[in-house]
Image 1 (cartoon, rainbow over the protein chains, first blue to last red):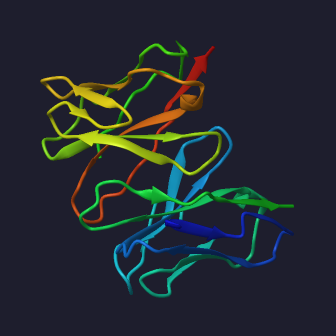
Image 2 (cartoon, helix red, strand yellow; image 1 turned 30 degrees about the vertical axis):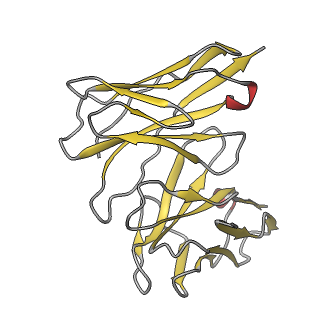
Length: 112
Length: 111
């Protein structure tokens, strides 16, 4: 079972460049989430999608956009990367009858 | 969601029980206590959750006080692989309620 798969695992961007972080889950979960984690800090919610076709802002949405492409996939886009967006990004999913979130292994993004 | 308070760090000897405390004095009646852990920058891993009864699974036990204002996660026989940051999170299971991570407790299991 793959669970939650994130790509890429590592990325270096120059300030102003754009990129899309990909996330896919194979557990038929309705809800999906994007978090960021800065060094020594807990995770902060960027955006979430409670079901296919819906997205909502979390705690720190500025500078990001998301797309729930289908039930499996939830992508995070940085339109114009800034050094403040250097972080580790985690995608997670949760089923309606599931209490626990399943997290991916993360994307380590550095913006120079 | 209610706020939680955890010690920033703890040590535990390998093979001994690790008891990780969490205070959540403002917890509401419909809020559950969740525990996750994060091993060395991997994605967080769900451990256990409970409402008011004590819970046990293959990973850990969760003891919730009768007034529900605090709880303890117990790893009965800690191993070096249990070294991680442990997060105590309080949330309801209403649709739209998110996991909100605080600072957690950094548990160091020592030989």
